[in-house]
Image (cartoon, rainbow, N blue to C red; front, top):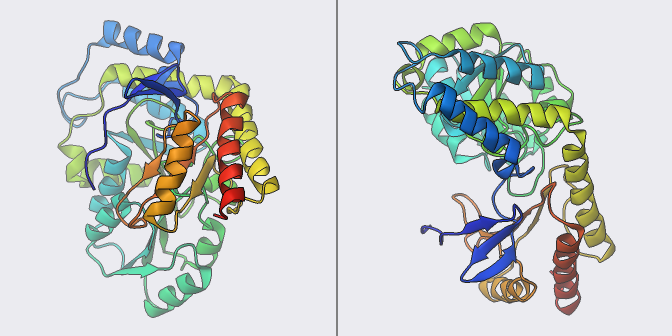
Length: 369
């Protein structure tokens, strides 16, 4: 991997690139709350009222009522019993793993899990077994390998960012021993999927009793920070047992104020979720009518894997001709040639979506994908 070229976002759904204004389907700002004027207003007001930084751990002098307010709002939004705010979503997985080290006999990891979960698995102080991506049969076989007395913890993404698919959490829990645990990194699903945006847990319709759901505030909510959704008992353990939590400074207070406002907006303005779902359905249905192959996934993501570098270059040329920035994604554990991931937002115009559909349809007609 190499460092990506700098980009400047303009007008919420466009990017300035080499002097050109192009439609932007990169990033994961699903509701474009990162550029919402009311979120910006809350951040400015937070800076004025609270200053920038508490400059201390929450276990010393760095706790603040705003963090507690944000955690309360988050538990209400997700319907969880408790929440712990951490600096990033990535850190959330590590905090959980540090706190649970030595408590489980085995860690089971989806082979396409985010690298944060792969790092977390190494901190659990137990054997790590990998199962095929969202494969229930292989998951069951891997559980059997652990033995009858095993106490496993399962690590998986909630909504997978490469294609918008959602992990089969209900099936995982059904096969999981009663004292097992499911750690779900739902950075992309939290706020986006499910009837009310509660993420993969809501899509699966499962209880949170044996589930720890980690979400981020930097994607659907457009701000920054990570959140661990769990029981009060687990929260108390994370606060005292994770070196990463104990020794780190929490997110800047103005960003916490912005996150409170973002949560309010998503709860109050139902049109945001409706537009996101409508836009994603519009694109996926149009591509299906055009014969463009692709999985039926609930997330607002359309992905395509080129077969070789020549095909990737040809598609890129067509996208640029249509004034669309080619969102070619190269990520650890992904295809060596990368893949195209189009993140549909609530704020993309119908004209922008039609241009994207047209590029896909014409490319498919000229040479089947």
